[in-house]
Amino acid sequence: MVKIYSHPRSGTHFLMELVASNFYFDKNLETNNRIFGHWSRLRNLEDMVKNGALFGSHSFALRRHRFLPIKKIYIYRDGRDVAFSMWNSKFYDKAWGDITFSEYIRKDIDWFSTPTFKSSSKRTILQHWEDHVVGWLKTNDRFILKLRYEEVLADQEKTVKQIAEFLKRPIPSKIKAVNKLVGLAPNKGKIHKWKDHLTEADHEYITNVIPNGIKWFWNHPKTQRT
Image (cartoon, rainbow, N blue to C red; front, top):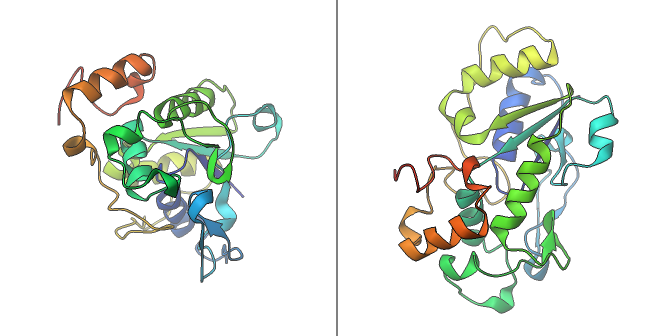
């Protein structure tokens, strides 16, 4: 069974739902209850995790990911939307109080890979995201399919066909799109939700702190404001 990997808040459950609906619709993929959120304000799930069996992890790319002959899909998203979703979902230390998004992107996060477990990262959310995405994208492995969240959202049919080819399975006769919010504490699943929360100074800061990472943005500010 394929496993899905991602940085937190990158469309993981959306992709899991798309994959399950089109390729594993006859299987029960639920997993046991678990906790989620930031370690300082963990929340308990009351229900089983839908499609949880498809989840690989939020781990950074590791050597074992390259050598285990298990098919994996890595989904990545514009880092500004990832950061906004983390902030909007309050996946940060409750001791920080009601900080603004602008303040949030400048603070060093206190977790690594997943906010559920405390760790000294010594990097901002955007630096963490950049390291995560670059690590996975530079991993050359025929067992890894790399997908952009924005492209999946824009053309689910094309994505299903890509996945079918990757898994060497027939294209579903009737492709099922995901038209509802899914996942753990889902936000609106929109693109560029960060726009109304960043100033010109913020954009300049982001460009300086991750100069190599902005190429993975979806129409980043230096080329187009949408």
